[in-house]
Length: 398
Image (tube, rainbow, N blue to C red; front, side):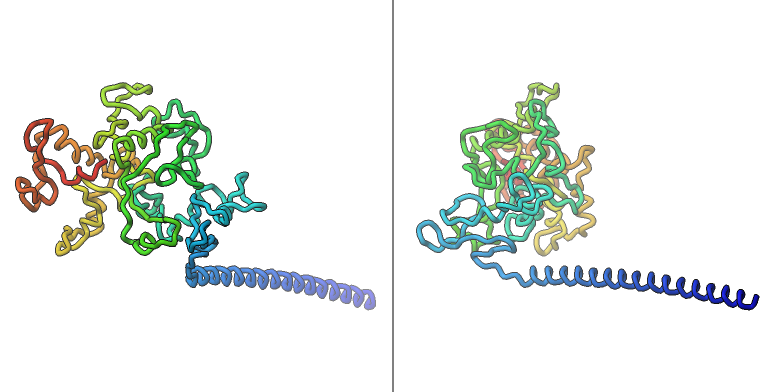
């Protein structure tokens, strides 16, 4: 009996030992997993810091102007000239490789690192190059930045082209992308605008924009070794023909908005004139091409949030940013709709002179009769054969 009890005790002892070994084994396995995870996390963090350090330490050169961008520096004539990525290709070009991968593309068009096409475009135009930053002020085209109040924009990469407001004939089911409006390989139009949009060829005459060299990039603009690259700001279409062509460009998608006042559209509505070369009667008079937000919006006098928070000694109002934002905020029921002017203030800017309302003008510094008014002055109107109070900002409306 004692022997039997002793055998049982021995067996229990063995079982407990095996359990302890098994438990310890699991502990070792978990420890290995923890150690492996810690090592992996460490490697990831080191990689991130290395990438950041690499980006911070990056020094642009003519042949490598931005991370991942490599271009030639000698042109077809044997002259030193930094090649361009978009158009003006030289016979020894490498520009194709800045956007395409011959054997490892992420799309059927061999585009590199693409979730959507805009991801590729933003690898340069997010401020990496320093100029034409579409997430910043956009060089006149507006912004694709969603981080500020009153933001609205073309929803690139998320909507069908046929979903455009005012669309009727436009039935396109293609996704709206940067290349819906721009030709990355070059164009006869300024800003690489397409000649055909949503399957519609809107004009055979190139669109020219009112461009001025951006003083912030004088070094580039004054260089003779950048294949003619100039960094410009735009305020919209340049001449009368450009205004109507620009409206035709927009109407390839927003087709029922291409109309004159007093006429019903195909959707049964009336619309402000958009297809005229007269001032204030084309798309660019009121809207940015890319998008808008509270930092870009202006009031009827052409003032921005930055103007109002500027110290009085520097010509501003000295408002707090909170006050300036509350003043400039677009409160329209439908949102800011890519507008250049907050709410409906552009109507006030134009119609004080084109359709006088006999409404008191705002107080200001200066004498409007002497042409020294800070916000508005009396301007002769041949239409009404008399001097009409006119906002100074009206001169900036296309």
